[in-house]
Image 1 (tube, rainbow, N blue to C red):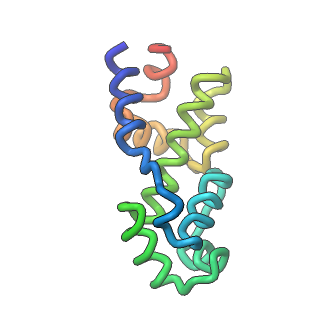
Image 2 (cartoon, rainbow, N blue to C red):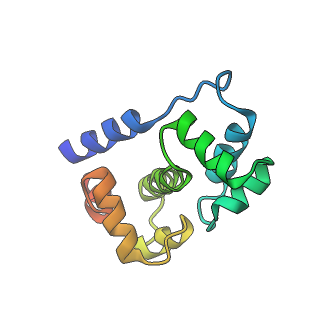
Image 3 (cartoon, rainbow, N blue to C red):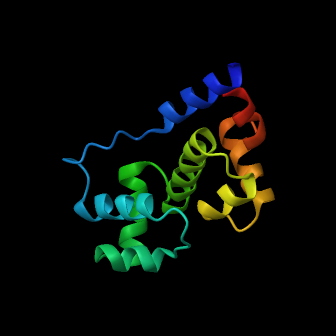
Length: 127
């Protein structure tokens, strides 16, 4: 139960609660695009093209306004989506790993543990 509480508190702490009024419209579009496509691989150029900014301007603006790089943001979204899938489905760890965009279930488990404090199997067991 402590691990679950720790994970939930962590997710609350990293929730940016972005105020849309203060964010650049391109950053809002980019964050929505990444949130809607957590299973896809992106380059900075890909995302910058989607929002109509140069890659350098996009990278700088994204970090300035969200406090994280686009890669960090995407990883956070992937882990949050995996958390949901672990909670509401009985899919295997490997299936969930692929569904949220991790090529390797071992790497997924490593990142999940680093971010939440427990591995996916322990997380599911604690539910």
